[in-house]
Amino acid sequence: MIVDGMDQSKTDLPHFAQSDKDTKHLAKITTHITGVLLHTRSPHNKYAYVYTDVKQIPHDSNLTIHCILATLMKHRDILGRELFLQLDNCFRENKNRYVLSFCALLVDLQIFQKVTVHFLPVGHTHEDVDQMFSCVAKALQKRNIYTYEDLRSFVKASYTPAIDVEEVRYLLDVKEWLKPHLAGNFAHHSKPLWFEFTPGDNHAAMRYKMWHNDPWKPEGDALFCLKSLPSLHHCPLWVEPCLERVDLPWLQKDIPSKYGDRIPPAKKEELRMFVDAIGNLDELPVPVSSWALLELVTWEIRHQEEEPTQDLEPLRARIQAECRPVTIGSQGRIQHDAVQEADYSSIEVGHHAAVNLIDSTKRPYLGKVLACDGDQVTIAWMKGSWSGEWKEWLCKRGKHMVPYTTTVPLQSVILWGFPLTGRNRLPKKVAVDLKERYSKIDEDDELNE
Image 1 (cartoon, rainbow, N blue to C red):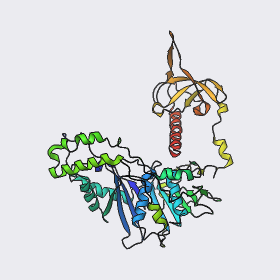
Image 2 (cartoon, rainbow, N blue to C red):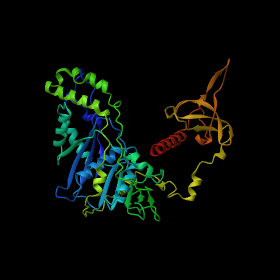
Image 3 (cartoon, one colour):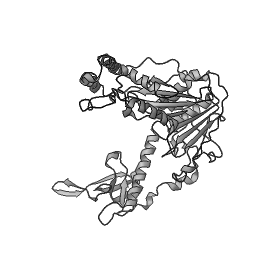
Image 4 (cartoon, rainbow, N blue to C red):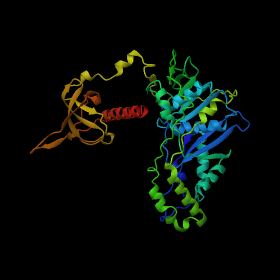
């Protein structure tokens, strides 16, 4: 099974084959598409699915889990013993502790005996789901698509096999349902491209590797994503829709009245009703008493095996990423990792220092160290930019301009002891290093949310 998202702008409604200046600026319904291709050993071999929404739901791991579960439910009578899942290397939607723990849960619940997850590397060639999206885009390119039903019909007929289109109105909050049962915070799992989940002593065991031909790690005791199993009879709650992302007032103002003759009269009423239906999405359904995962647990599993044979060797020359040991809580940690932490004892008064603050929009934050006292450091701040000149930051105090200084936690200092150029600019190597450090901090923060 491969899951991926399509470029949103190609499916906005209403969609015109020929745009014009009178309607180009008007509101459109942003229709997001998540595509799923399921390859099986059944007589039909391949099945195509599209899950749509209008941005009223968050595009995160809950959506990914929904698409996986919904697709498995449609084929619960032909499920095999193993699931091979291929996902885009995006931490927000796919490569996070919730999706990985859900895969472990599929093994713990004996829905599958093994789940293998492959994350597509950066710069990967297009997969067959991208070919499906290309067919969809070509089918829509030369047609006027006025309503959601028009979109559904054209998308269904654009590809072989015919695409099963399903509208996603609400999502179950599987993230919150899983959270109390996670074994700990995940770390360094953003680098490996392969993960495998198999039955363990108490819970499903997780192993990982960078490339297909590499041995699975850790070689000894495996990692466990879950410390306990959630009750399937205690169903997840609904995710609260967010109509602010939809900008409903703008849609109601422009659609369909301001489009004039560009939309046929019969389609105007259908489009207006669809916009009204979007406005009702903030009314959550009643809590569910049963859901797809509970039904899958009781379904018969049929034998079906296929070992992945993809060879990623040609990419090794282009992608050289350190694959650090993945950890979950205290699992997988090794003693010598401590020497990789920052040695703040080398910070000296007068050093230039770069700091990480909560507001990431004004980076980088640079200054000079005035004092270092225990777990705090006093910084005389400077003003500048990544490529511009850095000057002392002065503020008015009474009638005088004095250096702007504050005290920050020592651990917020991420780089120090570097020089500025003769023109008081960041050296290129320092700027590259600092950007990487900020990026790593952002990545870790996202993964731990």
